[in-house]
Image (cartoon, rainbow, N blue to C red; front, side, top):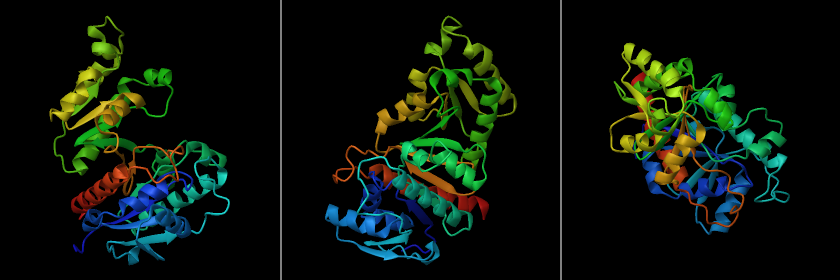
Length: 337
């Protein structure tokens, strides 16, 4: 076993969702252990019950710190926060108690990562409604982790089959997202994308900016955001030496990236990039948060309360998220050493 494997902390998400299931299932793959030393951060009793329900033969081992992780296949190592009341846990339902537990896992993982005890964090899905009931003021994972790490605006990237998709806006109503398509905002985020891509080892990344309107407005016949905001932003960025292209019609830019024409695509709003990624490979899409002092990846699906507890959740997105976290952690280590 490779001795320099990164230690990857996996938060198990909302206890009432599929997070515990996909977390345990993903660690039944030997391939994961060849790449990293995974450590689950959750509730040990819940995880043991989950494995029993799935009929999995696996040993669990509680750790006092991720530093003591050994990363042996079929031994799932756990930071046990002992924060789930199994007698009262309602699988498949939103609750403040489950929301609070999921927040505990995230907060503990970030503490470990900031202390250097974890090389990366992988997060299972949480419920936005549950964490709101638990008193969380942040809308979701990324915003909370950014706040805990002292980063005001983390950068979200989707990775799917080698294509990297970034977002100008994410959790905004569509009408507000359209209003946010401004030259200054585009320039700022493309500069950040360029910087983060170089950290990942791509010396001169080719970045495409998706258009907002059909046919990239068709010369102004269908909207004017391309002429007023996007083209001037691209022109300014190219003047800075950034290898950026656009606006490129959204119905073709993601396909072109899959063909290898671009290293990254800037999606202008949430669904523009989500639909492209998830249609291509729903379970193989991984969400990555950049700009943090540590690597963070996540599954790109929700808590799936409708199938929670039934043993049929697909763990592939979690597996891909762990593998990518290990890969990125090694790249970050090599660029900072």
